[in-house]
Length: 244
Ligand code: NAP
Image (cartoon, rainbow, N blue to C red):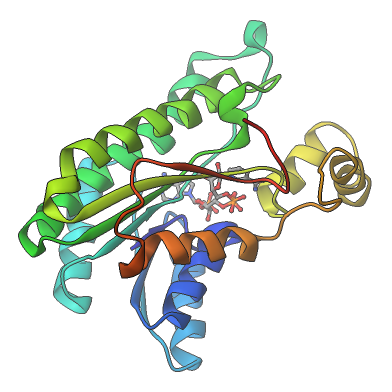
């Protein structure tokens, strides 16, 4: 189950896990997008379904997990990827900007993980991967987002401690600059063309380029694999060079 899978990083992770041989459920607010993504995977001889869900709504999450379990079998892998930005400097950040970001990233990951762990504990197997960010280390204009992404690191470590005995691992991926609609929207917000924004970003990245969704999907594939069973509670920065 990959949340926020209609586009960007989530879509790339869903494609990669399907390529790895998994049946994949693409969950997203955007029903048309996740259904189209699932159809594209199916056309490529994979097995996938698109499931509309707001990850911050407990009832919708319960229904989505029940549907996936009925159609594809009990979940073995959860990727908490759904995310939004509501950037602003602290003195201009509204209550809604704060709550919306906490609800999608933190409440969403909590509700999804709680719903799937029941099946994973029963199977004595599971892989939970959550998308943190290099912004967890602090980023101007992102008091809400950096707090949520740092929170996901603590959440991940706690799940690793609680669930390890049931054969379940929990890890976080913290990407740096990845070329998606999310970073394109940031470029627009700061009044730069996306090309200039990417070129400026690449200058401060040791490998000299911005990341692609597939760079993140590759790490998700590893963490979601059966062979990664001794890696748990870790945060892997996928940012083209050291951050912490
Ligand atoms: P994106 O292109 O904006 O895609 C995010 C997806 O999540 C969208 O399809 C969106 O649906 C969906 N979504 C939003 N709220 C949701 C909700 N409540 N329930 C279900 N789905 C929801 O973002 P991205 O760049 O691929 O980022 C994916 C993840 O990586 C996010 O958690 C992000 O914070 C993290 N990340 C990204 C970067 C980067 O540089 N791009 C860096 C570090 C971390 P709608 O289209 O309907 O809004």
